[in-house]
Length: 266
Image (cartoon, rainbow, N blue to C red):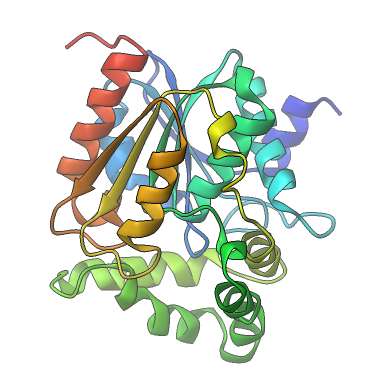
């Protein structure tokens, strides 16, 4: 089986747009391609937008064995290769960590990066790493719905509408399962990208909600400060899921970035 055929059989994607540059969207650890509905709807007018369900999530198949961050990054690389050329890569939270490692391991495939509400990994702090590793047991004990109901409200700002909280909760409950979530949590716990961020050559836009209570502004600033070709933007009135809570503002910044890096006409 070719790599393209394997990707088609195992990794589910949602897609919009038929022309323009390829924009690959990588979701957070508690989410799926459904999280990028606002980007598919708007940015699909300007680019070929592809949002994946990571291996072991939502409609994608479970991986055959444990998956490291490199495995997730390499799968994303295969997905890009299956479409030909290179991609602009948008990663939210855990997806941003995958995107950063992808840019280090496969620089020829990454035309540019958008890293939103992310971090250099949970391995930067032993307490964060331990808390991340504990999540798999919590999910096994409580089940996806109760797990999502506890976690989803913290992913948005305190003033987020109840409808958004419900949507985030439903997306998480439908997306996560073991063993995939456990592999993802371990990949975060084992990762500290601080020493390799300076190796990233792709032009990078770092976005962060001003009310992000999960990774926080400091983590996004650490990423932006370490990458040579970068711009850093605060998204007002948004929590950790800025792309969902303030989609118009978020999309406007991404589109501006693509107009510079991919020369999309104004």
